[in-house]
Length: 291
Image 1 (cartoon, rainbow, N blue to C red):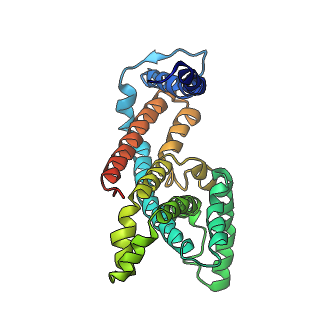
Image 2: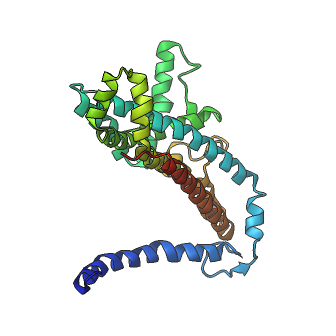
Image 3: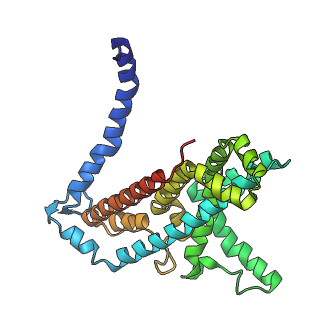
């Protein structure tokens, strides 16, 4: 049983956090659900008209919202593969007892320290000016041009930027997982004749499943909720070809003044992200191997 003194210390540290979480997250979320059932422009002086589930019906008839949903799904699938594949490869590289390993870790992790808005503006310069210059110097204008003006390649440009930002972070998590694998286990596999491929697929990958669970969760939730890079890099263009879930909701509320409809989209967005991330965690948790 917990002693009274321990309970007091427990309450001292948890009650303020619970108060902040309830004030900042729970209460606004409940208010947002209430607003999703009204027709309101967000101006306090104007009346809120109760419309029931009309906003939820409208959002499934909104072609722009459905298009942004497809853009988000496509972006998430691509980044889920690219971020984790690159992060895993970088982790294998920096744990390979090289002289430059420590410097490489710092270099690969640095993009994650840059804010999303700044990151977007940096890569906007690269795609607009640097790519144009490279194309003129090399004669490869068909490859090196302003991708941000191309409705097809603008989304791939966002994938590149997000991968560059997140790969170093996932690399750190994979490094921790790799370093947690016992050396004697790897040595025993070498003695038994297991080649590099077998060691990676039969030992490293199964024992890295907890790291995969974390990295897939972070990538999946981060890709679905992306807004800052989307805003600074493409602003949803060209022709709304890169407008993601979060930006569509932002534009609906603050651009068009449809507060109720925007809140309904936000609620649907929340449940989609929650369902996908929860499903991913359950599936990968079941595949984790206990040492």
